[in-house]
Length: 201
Image 1 (tube, helix red, strand yellow):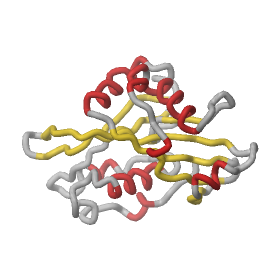
Image 2 (cartoon, rainbow, N blue to C red; image 1 turned 120 degrees about the horizontal axis):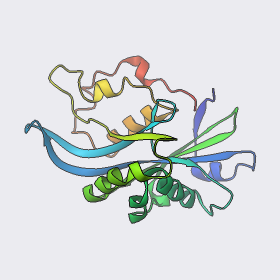
Image 3 (spheres, rainbow, N blue to C red; image 1 turned 30 degrees about the vertical axis):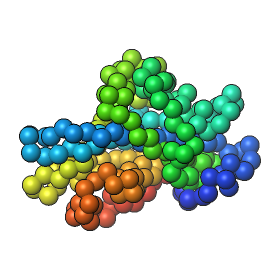
Image 4 (cartoon, rainbow, N blue to C red; image 1 turned 90 degrees about the vertical axis):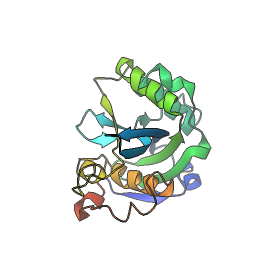
C-alpha cells in the first residue's frame, strides 16, 4: 500500500507525467436541526460509502481533458453526485491539503466546500440518479457530529468504521480547523488510537 506524505500544492503540480492526481471534497452546510429535540446537529457533513466498503469523500482521478484540478473534480462530482452538483463549483480557494504517495505514484488533493443546507439536501436527493450510483458509489452518509450520553455513540462510533486512505484523518482535521464541532468537544472525544492510523489508497 502507498504511504502518503503532505506536500505543497505548487510542488504537487510540478510532478511529472508519471503521477496521477486524485481530487475529493468534504461538502458541509450549517444545519439548525435538533436530534430528539435536544441534541443540536450544527452542521451536515457528507461522506460516501465506496464500492470497496470503505468511507471516503466524493471525487476521482483527473483525466487528460481536465484543464485544472478543480475542473476535473467538478466533473467527477457530477458523475458521483448527479445534476445537483452543477449548482455549485469547487474552487482553488477550497483546497486544504495535498499528499503524495508512491507505488503507485498518486497525489491526493483534499478540498472542503461550504454549501447551503438546501444545496446539500439537493445533492442527497440527486445522488441516487447519478452515473456512478450503485457502482463506484454505494450511497451518501452524514457524519454524526455529536456524542451521545454513553460517550461512544455518535462521532466516536462513526470513526470506528473503515476509511480509505487519509479520509479519517482529513475528516478530523477539517472538523477541528473549520470549527464544525462545538468548541472543546474535540478534546473530549473518545478516539481509540487505532482510528488515527492512516492507510494507503
